[in-house]
Image 1 (cartoon, rainbow, N blue to C red):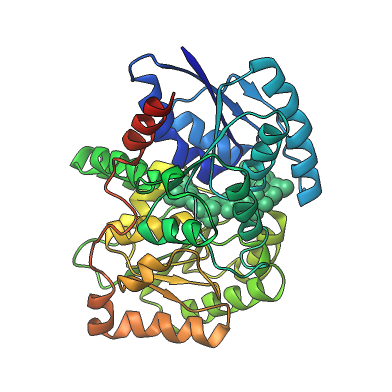
Image 2: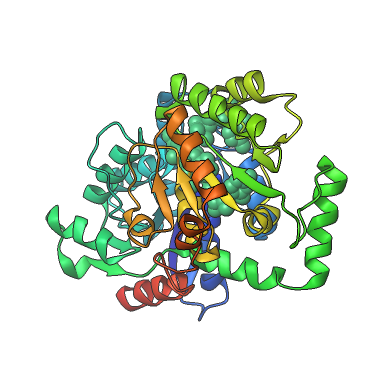
Length: 382
Ligand code: UD1
Ligand code: UDP
């Protein structure tokens, strides 16, 4: 039996690696898969571990309030050295572009352990946007042995950078595996009632009924390059939308980062049609995406999920490493300029022709079988 060490630290990595972990555990017994979390995130990671029933064998418990990049990189690097020396894996697996993923890749390289990278080849080619994710994924690609690209476009980036084609596989994004699994479990009356009661009891939020003229806007945001001015603009835009449109309810599960919490609470607290709530567990979050009319976000994962649900997305960033959603017409980059956010939101609220074009369900990021492909590929290599 071969040993695979899977390392992750944040909410989105956990969501996107859960399907691979499940596949490995229900597989042919070829792999002894060991999970190590750095816990770069704590509560937001634990929410996902609980939903997907994953109990890590190792937990570095790194998170500190308002940590910086040096804290995460140095803590993960030295912590992972000890775990890798103890476990002696044949292969390590990381996902995406977080500092945990990069530090795990570097630690594995120092110990000459081969690396598999899930969600490889995403690029903006703008060094500071998103920061530090763009550099994390570049550096990881240089270190990686087996590149699992979600789309043909991400594969073409890797090829352009000189990575041998036989080391790149287009698998789809595992985020769609997790999404389909969750949506399939939610499409019945019993679950709808369960989630409706959850939102009513916890936050006094009623979902607008099918015939209601009320519209639900879902917001998320956390990018480091938006801290400061960017977040102030985003919040001012949301405030204006809520004030001019009483038919709109804005639900915003606020990321726990203090750089997000502070401006959001200062600018938006107390506005009657804005609900500032805690980060949601994955299942109620997907339910809420499905109930929403429109999504405003700077999240990577949400940009990938929304097209599959047929929900228009306004991306509050100036760059994206996920152009497929834009090409499909579901996603629009609006930046962090207040007027642009307000104008684009009002257009979608008021103009059915714009809304209809942006609300077609398509799957540019995968077919729900990415984890299966990834496991088949590593099975064939080892
Ligand atoms: C991290 C990743 C980013 C990813 C995002 C997903 C890096 C550098 N950043 O950014 O790529 O898109 O996660 O959400 O790898 N906090 C809590 N509890 C939690 C999580 C965070 O309190 O469960 C607070 C802490 O004060 C922490 C801060 O948020 O210090 C920042 O967390 P961190 O992981 O450094 O940055 P994110 O913005 O979450
Ligand atoms: N998500 C969640 N609860 C929330 C907000 C987001 O479970 O309150 C999920 C979302 O469905 C997606 C992932 O978290 O799968 C995105 O995480 P985030 O936006 O923090 O990170 P990014 O994708 O930008 O790296």
